[in-house]
Structures are given as C-alpha cells and as structure tokens.
Length: 239
Image (cartoon, rainbow, N blue to C red; front, side):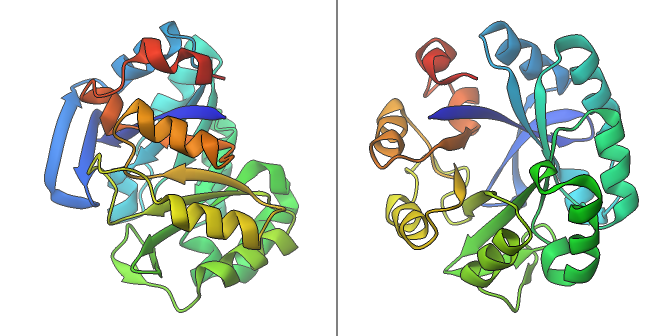
C-alpha cells in the first residue's frame, strides 16, 4: 500500500479543515512548500495537493506551487480543487501535475469531461467521490450531486479511468478512523478500480487496518501534521 501525504492549500499556506468546514481551519505552515520539503526528505515521491481557494471560487491559485514542486523535487503530483474547465486542466498539466483529481466536472459536464479524458489520456485523471451520508458532494462539498457513487464509478471505468479517490466527509479531519466498511464494499463491487482512501486516518493502527483490507493507496494529512503518525513510521509506505 502507498501512503500519499496531503497538502491542502489556502492563500499559499498549508492548512487542514474539519469536515470541509472553512470556519474550522487550522494553519500548519505559512509556506505550503515547507511540508513538501519535509515529505520529500522523508522519502515520499508523491504528493496530494488540494487548492482550497479554487474549490470555492473555481480560480486555480496553486499552479505556481505545482511548478516549484516539480522543478525542485521531481515528485509526482496529484492535484485537485476547483477544476471545472479544459483550460484549468491544461494549465495544471503544463505546470507539472501528473494526475488531475476532479469530482465536480464528471457530474456537471460529463460530455466535456469525456473530451478531456480522450485528449489527455485516462491515466491523467483521478475521479473524486466525496461522500456524506452516501450522497456524492461536489463544488467543494457545497452541493449534492444527482448521481450515486456507483454511477460515478461506472462512468469513469467506461472512460478507462481506474483511480478513484473516496473521501468520507463525515470523517475528514477527525482522526476517528477510516471508513473501512465503505471501502470494502466499493472494492468488492468494482474490483477493476484502484481505490484511494481518504478521510479519518488518525494512527498507524488505521494504516494497518487499511492495509489489511488491501486498499492500494491512501491519503493522510492531519494525522501527520498533528504528529499522531510520525513520518519515520510511514517511510515504508512511501512511494
């Protein structure tokens, strides 16, 4: 299993929200590149970036950080947050993003999303499934989609996309543990997808639990920043 450290960016700061609530935000680093440096020095070569500014406004602000990460570390970059147009996708891929994470575009404009997948290749995309009480949330978790998680997965698989980031919003930033039953169910129903687990990781026990149910990849954020999990402990999951 791979662990990908998360860096949520707001005003070029590294922050974390509780359950996606901007009113419950903690700033961990004044410069969002600082955690990148720490992760890189600990052996991680893949980063999960979320542009929180863009998730609310739709305006990408972190492309400069993407360029810096790529130039100074060469790390693989998974980038999400507010991606709603072909111009934004092109901007980010040109800046150095390796994977574009989007949950809104496949729902709000599936035709355009299909065109983008054909133009840039399915391997360039990760579909985000942000779930709250089994409902798919989009546009920075502010709206409920009219499609189910299963419909979203089926649509992505038809396009050749294999990676799906699943976040249980009710657990995000809580350190209360991941949604193991949800992940087991999804992997059983859709064995051809590569699930990326997100939300709730709070200890190494949670990492071991995810590994025990064969989750191939997981995103960890707050637990690292709060030192509930030490980077030294995570090294063997770096990649």
